[in-house]
Amino acid sequence: MTGANGFKVNAFRRAARASEGESNDLAAWAREDRGRLQTIDGIGLSTANHIVELVTLGRIPDLDTLRGQVPSGLPELLTLQGLGPKTVKVLWESAGITSLEELDSAIDAGRLAEIPRLGPKSIANLRLAVKARIASGNAPRRYRLGEAVPQAESLLARLRLAKGTIRAQFAGSARRGRETVGDLDLLVASTDPGAAQTAFVTLPGVARVLAGGETRASVQLENGLQVDLRVVEDQAFGAALLYFTGSKDHNVRLRERAISRGMRLNEYGLFVEAEPGGEPPSVPVSAHTEEEIYRALELPFWPPELRESSALDSFDTTPSLVELSDIKAELHAHTTASDGELTIDELAQLAKSRGFHTIAVTDHSRASAQANGLSVERLLRHIGMIREAEARVGGIRILAGSEVDILADGRLDYDDETLARLDIVVASPHTALRQDPEAATRRLVAAIRHPLVHILGHPTGRIIQGRDGLSPDMAKLYEAARESSTAFEVNSHWMRLDLRDVHVHGAVAAGCLVAIDCDIHSAADADNLRYGVATARRGHLTAASCVNAWPSATLHAWLASKH
Ligand code: DGT
Ligand code: CA
Ligand code: CA
Ligand code: ZN
Image (cartoon, rainbow, N blue to C red; front, side):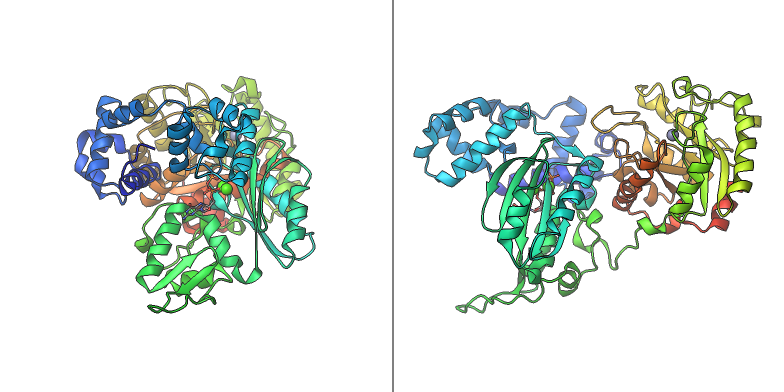
C-alpha cells in the first residue's frame, strides 16, 4: 500500500511464516545468539535484526514508521475477499477510502464506478464481501479445525450426489490440518459444472452467495464460515488439488522447481515450457493426481500436513508419518466416575469398535473437584471395578489409570504409593495456567521426571482462541522427556491440540515419545482423533515414536518399565 518493493514485502512474509513454524525459542536466540536466527530458512540479516528489535525493544521501529504512513483502518481492507494491496491503494488515493465503513458507504453511493481498476462485477463481489463482514461483526474470524472439517464433509457428501460429479475433496488449510482455517476450499471434478454450481449455492446451511462464475463460487454459511468452490475437469483434478491445498509458500517453491526443470506449473497442470516463438503446449506432462506431479518434479510426495514453508530439499524420501489407521490404543479417557458420560464397559466397547487393543481409564484426581475428581478411597475402589470390567468385557486390555493433576509447584495430586497401584499415569496441568515461564518449566519438568508418570497430558493447557496456557522452555521439557521416556500428549480435541504442531516437531527432533489421545468424555470425542493425528503429522511424528501405534506387547512393556 505504501508502494514498497515487492521482494522486500515477500521477504517479510516468508520470515513471518518461518518463525511461526519454528519449534525453537527464537526470543532466546534473539537475546543470546542472534546469528543463529539467520540459520533458519526464510530469515535473512535484515529480518533477523527486526526480530531482535521486537524481542529487546518490544516493537519494530520501521513498522511503527510504516503504520504512521497508512490510515489505521486501511490494513483491515486487505482481509476482504478479492482486495489486494494495489486496489486498496487506489481506493485510498482516488476515493479517499480509509476504513470498512467508508468503503461500505462509497459502494452504496455508487462512488466506486469511477475507479479504473474496478469493473462492475468486482464491485458487486466486493459489496457482498463488505456486507458479509459487517454482518459478522466486523471481525475476520478463523474457525477451529474441528468446527470446519465436519462442515466440509457434509457439504462434500451432497456435492458428490450432484449430476456429473466424479470426485470431490476439500483442500486449503483444512487439508493441511492447520489448527484454525480462514475459509474452506472445496474442489469438485465434474462433467457438468452447472449442476455442481447449482447444487453448491443451494446447499442447506448456505446463508448467502458471495460470488459466482462458471467454474467457481463462494458462499457464506449460516455460522459465518466462507466456502470457496472450484469445479474442474477430472483430468486436471490433481493439479487443482495441489494448487488449492497450498500453502502459498509451498506452491511458490513448486513453481520455482518446475521452472528450473524447463516446465511450468499452475492450477491446470505441469506443462513443458514453450519453445522460443512456439505455441505453449496445451497438454500437461501431468495433472491427474498430485503424486504424478511430485514424481514429474523429481520430488517425494509431500503429505499435505507438511506443505507449509520448508524448503523442497528437506526430504530425500517421503517421511513415513503416523496415520489414523496406525492408532491402536486410547490412553486418556474419563468415565462416569469423574466427569465422563460413559461407563467403563461402554468405554471399552467403544475402543473395541475402533479395533484398539488397549483402553486406559484415566479419571480425574481429587484436586479437580469441579470434575468430580476421585479421592484415594474412590480411586482404589475404581481400580477394582476396572479389573472386573476387563475380565467381563474381554478382547481388550482395560488399564487402571488416572489423569492426575500437576499442582502449581510440580507435585502430583496423589502420593507415590497410590500412583504405584495404577497401570498408567497421565499427569496434566489444569490450574495455575498463567504462571510465569520459569515456574511452568520447573513444574512440568518435575512431572515429566516423576518415575511413575507415563504421559504429560495437554502439556500447556492452552485453549485455541480461548487462553494461551503455559509457555515453558520447551527445550528443557524435551530433554527431560527423552531422558525419562515420558511421552508428550497430543490432545486431539480441536479446542486443545496440545502439544501444538511446532512443539510436536521439536519433541520429535529431540527424540521424544508422543501419545495421541482423545481425552474421551463422551463417545463423540473419539472422532477427534483425526485432528490429533493431523497435528502430530504436522510435527513429523512417525508411528515408531507414537506409543498409541505400538503393538500391545511393546506398549505394555513401556508402561511396566515405569514401576
Ligand atoms: P486459510 O483459508 O487462511 O486458512 O488458508 P488457505 O491456505 O486455505 O488459503 P486460501 O483459502 O486463501 O487459499 C487456498 C489455497 O489456494 C492456498 O493455500 C494456496 C492457493 N492460493 C490461493 N491464492 C493463491 C495465490 O495468490 N498464489 C498462490 N501461489 N497460491 C494461491
Ligand atoms: Ca482456505
Ligand atoms: Ca479460500
Ligand atoms: Zn482428561
